[in-house]
Image (cartoon, rainbow, N blue to C red):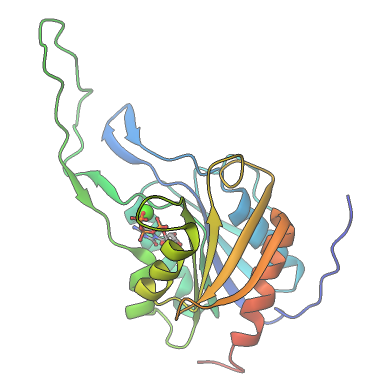
Length: 234
Ligand code: CTP
Ligand code: CA
């Protein structure tokens, strides 16, 4: 494989990357999950380490091996991910939320397996509640003031707007320093080896684009983060 040139421009920095997809228990054998493989988050962790950072990877059900030389904190649910990210972020210069975090979880997971009633015609209804938005909370209540926060958004176009329109609205709503937008569907995004993204600032303005391997996209994200990092402790 082609070795990517790694400037040591993250030396002395601690960065936190969340990756993968959370799973919210329904009962002891079932969960609500998503299709995130964790590949892009793992690439972000790998490239940050190659560029000299100390890296904490908060890992939710990765389908790929984490890189060597990074600290891995395994998590299961959105709430576990929230606690691990906030704890690791207490001394971090940047936090990148590449994980697919559940938006909803069962209000009360069943203690025993939910059984079907062969005679019943109606299916059970499982009440859901919203999880805390970890990224939004990092912006409004940062564990370390002054640290940089990066979000991801996988969007599809629909009758209400294009991928870029949805992404720009989300960037403004979330208030992160950067939002990494990618179009999903048609073989790009989830589980694939390549990615194509648009980088948006907090105002929703396009500040860059990148396409290629997930490592190349990761380097483009760090290229955009490095100039935002402050000198010395925040
Ligand atoms: N995110 C988060 N906590 C959540 C949900 C999402 O931190 N409970 C983060 C993701 O890690 C990602 C960003 O928010 O960095 C955007 O996630 P996305 O699902 O695109 O946005 P939502 O605000 O959840 O909007 P929706 O799913 O309705 O499009
Ligand atoms: Ca969501």
